[in-house]
Length: 606
Ligand code: F6R
Image (tube, rainbow, N blue to C red; front, side, top):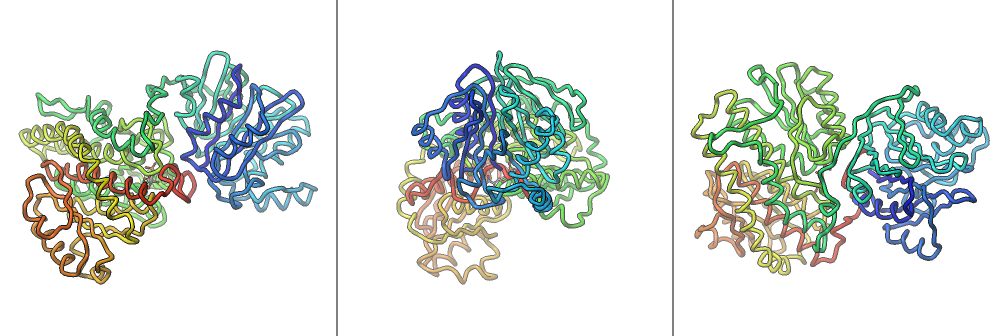
């Protein structure tokens, strides 16, 4: 978490930094700050709360410069306060940091014993002291950073600025993302792609153990030992407009409405409709030796993983387990050479997922990934990656990334079934044709967004919600509940509908609305039974049903209809109205959809 940005060049660094931080605010927003190089030395502006407060502060005390670094914070060590906001300054050195320094208490005691005075409760301040001391001893800034990173244990993407070398910024990375945007006589460096797009689309993705020095348009990369390293430049095909709100009130809403395009882009080029085949470039894993699949992920991506179990077991007859990445790594999963691990992550930077991938590799598994960010750490750690083409997802609550992950899992399972011969050609063709129809069907659902908004107005005052589903839509009950709780702060739980009678049904009364996911599939009659049980106990029911359904309306108070599709694709269609419902309930409640409390989009710490 936390977003960092640095700029050196001929533009006004303050403008570039503020605009970059605004694109990174999804990574944390409890305080923000910048440090810029003036003739008289480094000047600092910091402010607690959202970035807007920092902008106001800069309006009150204007500032301009050509080199500077900035930070938007998601607190780990030390509460949100101006003192704890980055950059941290020590004797002419300013530092911003994303990550965690695990041995900071030991180092802090050591530094204090030799006279250092600490002004914050953060782990980062260790770095400003270590780097400042090294420069005072005569090391250049790059070597000072090198010596500091060798002393710390933990994870970091950091930027440092020194009054001794105005115009230069040094960056270092270990297990936190950092991208260098290379312009004409200017360079920008940032935690994520959207922040560089206003300056350039040419990017260098730094690797773990890289130290970068930027001065104007000059970029030099070395390793922790000082040896030069060569990193390739990549052209980013995301446009700056893709990272803007485009007239929508929130990124989340924009991203919900982008789903027809995002899903299309994700299957485009992977399916040959005429031939009825799925095609993957560069996939050379021997599937015949795979005895078990493990899918690992966190949060919303884990919900996608859960649907994957149903599809892989049905399409390819390979036993498939799903694990939360944070659990997988701390137990002893039965993973070996005949296991294929599929890691799913929108950002490709989630610390738990990356650690689980490393553990799986250590145990000899082949690991592939589904990811939305090119050149992210996950894509580099794994043997092959299915890139989803959701485009930049800025909304803290994941929407289009999720439906493109569902699309990716469907395609992967089809491909495995095709390769292993567990699906016949006719069936594959049929399933491909169903997939191709999905974007239009999502559009039909989005056409009813006003109706769902009206429902939200009726339901937003409830304090609790239950979501129920069965089979492949049980994970969608979990996802629907997560969307609601994370942006509206309403307590919501997802249950497998068959579990209701084993306990949760005790919660049902007139104060407990239930969202019942009941498209026409094999579990439909059972879902009607579950709705009956809720109805009898006076709970209100919003049912998500297939077009043309006439039976559910006798049990449900409100209906949301989705077009008919293959059961394996219903999760995509069911998800969309649940996102719209959660969004409008949050808007009605007046919560901060753009920046839900306590959350950050990319969880790069354990
Ligand atoms: C919820 C949400 C999170 C993420 C989770 C994993 O809306 O966005 O639950 O899904 O933090 O993130 P990635 O997919 O980037 O690994």
